[in-house]
Image (cartoon, rainbow, N blue to C red):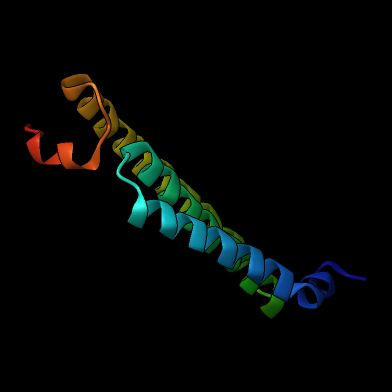
Amino acid sequence: MTETAWWIEHYRLVASAAAALFVAGLYCIVFSRNLLRVLIGTELLAKAVTLLLVLAGAVTGRVAQAEAMAITLIVLEVVAVAVAAGVVVGVYRRHGATRVRLLMTLKG
């Protein structure tokens, strides 16, 4: 069995795993008041999209294009996490907590 055939045969399982990651990430973002949990939820959403990109590339046979898009997404994700982590550290240093509502009081 080739690698592409494996992906085609198991696409429902992989898509279900991506959907579970997406729902968990969305739950973290919507129902959490902690900035670190929101950041983790954003990461889960990005991982679900990356998994779906790889699945789509494998099923359609455009693996190289899917890999390029996945690597680009990972690089953008690292930059976004670095900036967001800096904001979380700034909120924590200023207020001693990481609640979402404290973002309104940040300056500069």
